[in-house]
Image 1 (cartoon, one colour):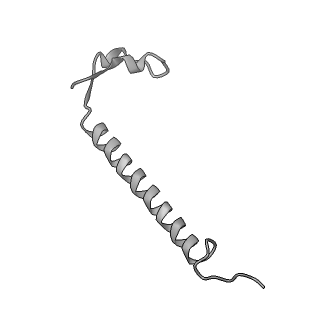
Image 2 (cartoon, one colour):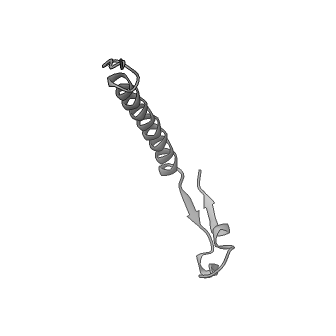
Image 3 (cartoon, one colour):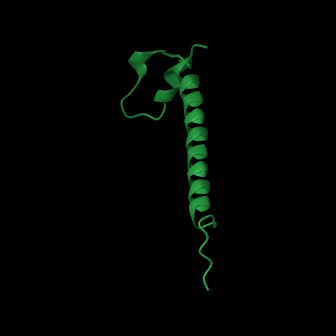
Length: 68
């Protein structure tokens, strides 16, 4: 005889656990992403010596200076 319980782990309970787990992961990643976005939005920088910047150069990032 098979055990066909509707509240078994592979039934409704398993589906609810998976749904709650996925929604909690979504909430954590959304909150983390918003925090990163707000931190980046308030981090202003200024470009110095823009005439010395070459198109194909690895030193281009040295011309950026954080204003904060």
